[in-house]
Amino acid sequence: MTDLKTYVSEAFKLQESFCKVTLDAYVVLDIEKNILNLNSMFSQICGVKPKQILKTGDLSQIINFTHDDKEVDFKILFGKRRVVHLNKVKATLVRDSEKHIILNMGLFPFEKDGNIIGGFIVLRDITAECELVDKNKSRETESLRDALTGAYNRNFVSLFLAREIPDMLVQAKSGKFPDFSVIMADIDFFKKVNDVYGHVAGDETLKMMVQALRKATRSSDIISRYGGEEFLILLPQTNLDRAVETAKRMNEHIAALEISHEALTFKITASLGVAQWLVGIEDFTQAVERADLALYESKHNGRNQVTFSAQADNSFVVKKTS
Image (cartoon, rainbow, N blue to C red; front, side, top):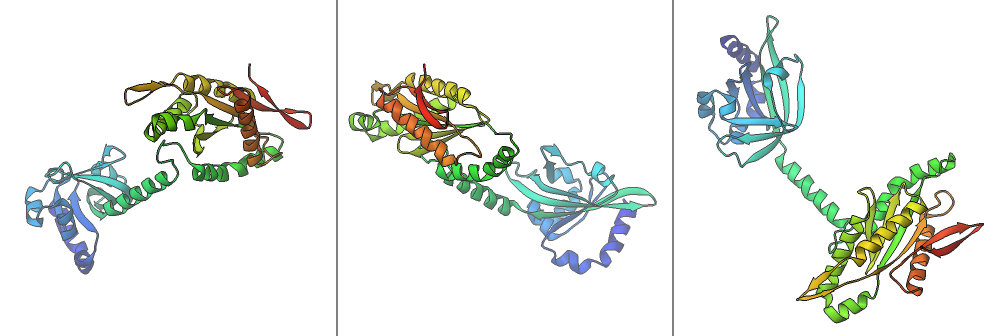
């Protein structure tokens, strides 16, 4: 340890001004994690006075570090014999285990006579930055979801398509037409639900509608509230036959719902329209329009059913499922 203290003392003579003014925290350890030197910023992070830290000596009695849910092993990292950078290290104070700090860490090993004898650790507190990023992500997520039902909204659909369409068009140009289908779903007689049971019951109905749709779909499918009581569901890598089967399952799950409100229980049904998007041949909006036309046919023919738009020769026809 004496060798390392001497080494550190000599090295810091050239960096004394830096060590006093740096906004980063630093601490010097020997190979056994004993603390040999530190600056005031490290003391502030730990919430312990410098003299007390040096008196305690053992880093693990002051603060613990984890990275990717694993304890940071300084002996192994120093043993790499090179500078190591770790981002978003989680620091937990021994005196307050409920408080966590997020840090970027740089490790600089000390070597003497071919042996690693310890190292210099620089720490930058990025907790506030991470919290700000998390808040912004939360706001961004909220802006892409319907506040009432939790389903995605039109903004998300637009972003999703902007990301996916270019690759899909490349596939189509190469002759590999990707399967992609859409379903339009609309709650039957929804106005009656609001009129008879009230708007609170109507809100609960919309929420349960989304739950039923989720039961019938995969995690890769996109459920979005398209407007009012109407929902648009995107089914990537799904041809028309499979999309129709998915729509049938949706219809069954929706019909099985029992919605309770103020000691009253009622049931709902929905009408659905299905279309496969002919990538590279038609625009996405045209596929949605065909699904919407099929939905209209479901309504016109008695509701509570699935109708799909199918290609016939050079045109499209709508057909009711069996």
